[in-house]
Length: 225
Image (cartoon, rainbow, N blue to C red; front, side, top):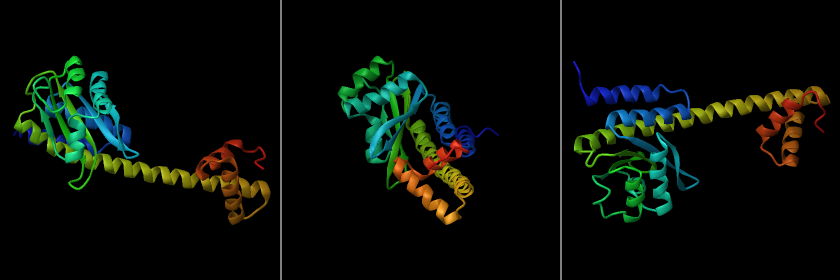
């Protein structure tokens, strides 16, 4: 039995959670958003260093439409982030809320927009904006489906970033251990002394501990000093 949007949403959720890393998850977030909403372009905006930035987009036009929000300091994506809710623009020509942003978006060929908050009910980390060349492309049902999808996308992105962070930490720890081994063998010192030497070397070179470890591993068997 075909369950329509419910089945599509379930398939999208399963696909999002099955991605192995952040870039793949972002790509799937874009692809599934287009499939579920029937939009013509989609872009993801995330807070980076406390300020919103366009992370990725399905097309150059969608990316420019999102970047126009940043240059104009207004738009539905920014409002979705602020209000932590969906924002619908039925017709950019008739919507009085963001006149500075509407013109460049119209020139890109988009007429309606569905912007969805990414995050939790307490905090927003970004926005997913779906653009359509049609007026009124995102009716009540599509907007509600988008809200549900945004919740899954938020969890998938958070999970991918967490997993990526853990994997990076494990890689860094492994590199530091290898560098300690190189220093122990090279200087005839124990593990604690090797770690102290590694830390001192990283400070002298003005780099992170893990970065200096990678340099030491790459320099083997050259003298580190």
